[in-house]
Length: 114
Image (cartoon, rainbow, N blue to C red; front, side):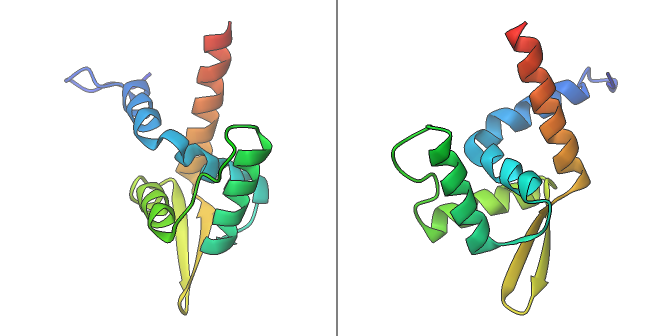
């Protein structure tokens, strides 16, 4: 794909993001499925619901406000989500880059299965 003079490709950078994001991908999947902005607490509840529904563990992924803040901060810093503040409430939605990132992850997983 794209590279600069240092040999860094878009794929290389996205692969590093996958490694660093880890279980944060669940937040992106929930936001994509929702198709609308979600309040931070609603996002947490939906992530835990989907995470448990998919049989990943017997306990919630997000067990504290601290963990929720860490995940949302990472996603926001990476530009994967948009955040709109309304009073004290924060609404999270998937950014355009977030949609492209999810597509990249899905395509990569498909290729790995072949």
